[in-house]
Length: 138
Image 1 (cartoon, rainbow, N blue to C red):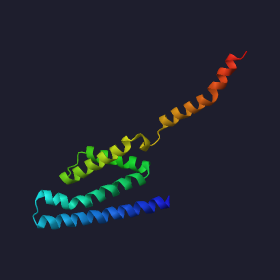
Image 2 (cartoon, one colour):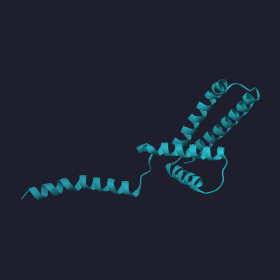
Image 3 (cartoon, rainbow, N blue to C red):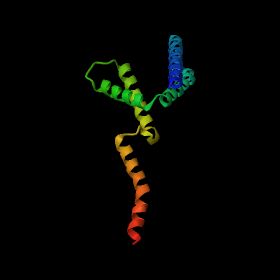
Image 4 (cartoon, helix red, strand yellow):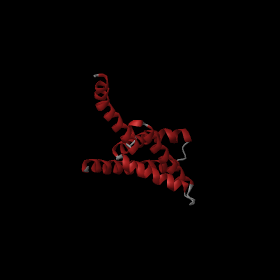
């Protein structure tokens, strides 16, 4: 568990450093008053690296923590508090990323219902053939 925690800490530190670099570059480019096309083109490589780190963080973080964060973000967005437009967009983007992450069936955490269905299927596979043979043989 500590290896995962260390890796998560490193990924979060990398993400923070890269975000600071993006902010610095964006401020520098904005000061030069570049056109939007050149602005986006200049920041695209860093943005792609940031997106890759975000995906690594999602894959490394335990599903239970991600589900807690998903519920927290949903609660924050549904709360009637006044939020800035940029903060609201950031929360909506995080919510979209978390929902997309969990839309893959392999990444959904097992619920009690799923565990129960799997248990019944395994029990049926083990005991049903013997019960059928016992009924057919006089």
